[in-house]
Amino acid sequence: MRIEVKGRNLPVSEDLKDHVTKRFRKVDRQVSELAELEVEVFEERNPAIADSQVAEATLHLKGVTLRARDASPDIRTSINLCADELQVQVKRHRDKRRKRREARAAAVQTAEAGAAASEEEALVGGGAPETGPPGVSSAA
Image (tube, rainbow, N blue to C red; front, side, top):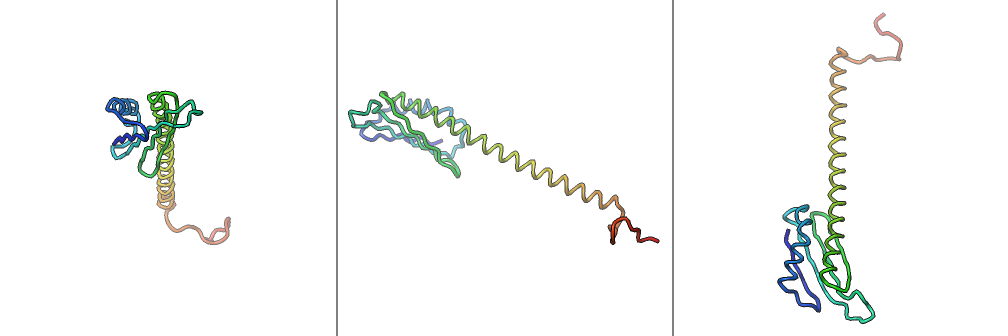
């Protein structure tokens, strides 16, 4: 997974990049190598906002984009909260995909079993099916 850390009104140090890499390691193990994670950290300049340190994470996966945004008085806490939130979203997305894949495989399996059973009945039946009204024998 490629990780990009951006800072808006806030310098991004190597220490902060290392912290982001460490906190999103669990997410990294659950997604493909082609996934892209963008973490944007910034500071709200409004003094009325107590939780001024904000972290936003956007994870671009194949076909879906997951986002998380958290704020706290400390930037590291914001990153931790954001990582936890994104981890839950990734787990939910993986479980949803797994269920769909299993349901599709089960449907294909039952369809194949049904087709095989109807072919077997046709072979065991010994020929053409009866024509005419039910209960009336054509061989009189």
